[in-house]
Structure formats: structure tokens, C-alpha cells
Length: 243
Image 1 (cartoon, rainbow, N blue to C red):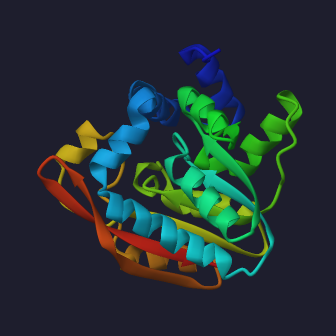
Image 2: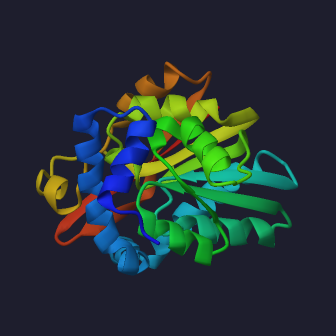
């Protein structure tokens, strides 16, 4: 059953969000609820197949650098699991035993995650640890409190408080783990803020490094040779790795 708006508001209140933030999140949720049935096709429309493969390959390569045979991954704002499903398969092809969990605030996305073999967690990126506690205590789940990999693809510019999200990711990162973010570079296409419910116009490499360096010991960020295409608008992507 998909929760009602009132139930979602109560959930967000449990996570101590104020009324203004709740209203902003509800607006995003309603937008992505409409997108949920076609979300995979929408991602394919934004990205050429070559770009999708590059993103999956680059994230997988970063994870393989951990040199672990068993990996626990948390995908933050996982959406329909479009990328997480592909990353999981690629890691398994490399003989890695993978557990993948997907955290998302949009209820309809959670069903799609489950259908793809990804354990869904209803929660908010700014409060990952608290969301996991609620999942374990109130929904009888057994979600780990620490992950080898915390990743997010094409979602970071949607977060209300991105620096707080990085801190939230750090809080559930195991020792010697890695946070990987792939997202859109800073741009000036204001129309995307309404059509895609973007919160920020992407981030520059300098901004990402500055945010990350306040929380992590090491931050690497670079341009990727891929882009998103929304109508006539083309926006580049970056990859950031935090340890």
C-alpha cells in the first residue's frame, strides 16, 4: 500500500523536519510518484546508452578498488534502482558477493527497488541513520548500520541540504568505506528547476571539494565524459569520491 500524504508528513515529522522542509519534500515526492512507472525509460531518455555504461563502469571500478569479496552497498535516493541494479550485476560478474539497499522517500519507487532485488528503505537522505533506525524498529527490518559503499547517482542536486547529506552518508559508512556521487555539473538552465524539480543548479568541482573536505579526509572530483540531455539542454556530469 502506498502511504497517503498525511502518513508521509507524519513520517517526516518523526525525522524532525520542519513544516517548510516537509512541504518542499512533499512537492518532490508528488513529482517522482508520477514519474515512478516510467522512471527507467526517463533515465534512458536523459542519457545515451554509452553514457549509462560509462557511469556504471566508473562506479563499479571504484568499488572494486576496495578489493573485497563481500560488499554492502547503500544507494541513497535510489529511485527505481536503474543504476544500482546494473552495478550489482557488474560486481557479481566480477565474483563479488553484493548486498544492495536502496533508500528513497518516494513510496512508489520502493516497490520498483524490491522488484529488482534491492532491499528498499523508506527514508530521507539528510537523515539516513535515523531512517534506518525507524525501518528496523517499526517495520521489523534488519538493515545494517554500516556500509562499505554509499553511492548516489543523479540525485545530489535534488537534496535540500547537500552538505548535511554528505554528513549523513559519513555516519553510515564503515571503516575504510567509500562514498561515490555522480551528478550534474553546475549550469544556468533555470527552466530545469521547475520541469525536473531540481533544488540546485548542479555543483562545480570546487563546490563539491569544499563541501566534502569539511567532512571527509580525502575528496576526489573530476569531470566525466558523459552528459544528460533534457530536450535541447545538455548538462555535463562529474564523479566525486569521498573517503
